Length: 126
Image 1 (cartoon, rainbow, N blue to C red):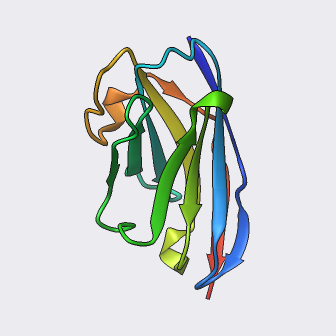
Image 2 (cartoon, rainbow, N blue to C red; image 1 turned 30 degrees about the vertical axis):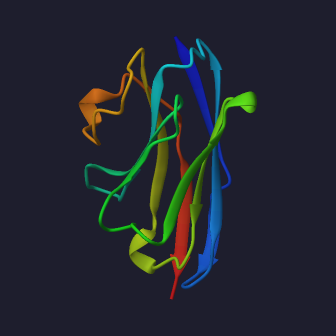
């Protein structure tokens, strides 16, 4: 079991930045893939980025590549999502997710991740 708590959401102007954090507690074994997803009202969850806690390899969805950066501080069991050059279409609830006991990240399918945080809202105005 792992518990995930997101923070850092809020409001920003288009072109601005926000930094989201996801703190993990409980079973924080080193072999896990951490991911960020987002969900617009009335729509399904969209994968944003992944990072593996062992080695730090990353992957980004095309929609955010070059604008968002996923990183981690393993000593703090925390994963970050630095969101730069924000656009109004980035407005969504952002969720952190974990896939435990894996040696690599297995993509951005919602069904891959068994553990989820409660979400943090990001609102970008034009």
